[in-house]
Image (cartoon, rainbow, N blue to C red; front, side, top):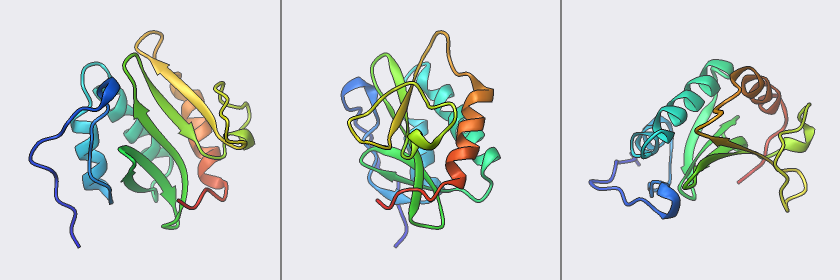
Length: 140
C-alpha cells in the first residue's frame, strides 16, 4: 500500500506535526515540511546529516516522529519537536562514546535536546549517528 500525505496536518503540543505512520521517504519529508519555525531547518539538517552519514538508512514515521534505521527492522534514532527544542533519541545511546547528555528511564536510551541557541554540534551529531548505525538497533 502506498503512503499518502494528509490534506491537512494538525500540530500537536509543542508544535510536533501529527503525521500518519508510514515507511519510506514520503512520510518523513511530510513530517519535516510541517515542522514550525526555526525547528524546520533543523529537521532538514538532521535528516540530511543522517542520510549522508548512513546512505543505506531506512526511514519511517511512527508515533508522530521520524525514525531512522537499517535492515528494515532495526531502528537507531528518532526525533520529536517540543515547544523550545527538538529531542533526538538514540535508542542504544548508552553504547555511544561519549554518551549523549540526556538520560532516560529506559536503560539504553540517551537523548540530545537541541535548542535554537546554541544549536546543533554537527561533528558530534554525525559521529553519534555513525556509531548508532553500526549498533544492532531496536525492533519497534
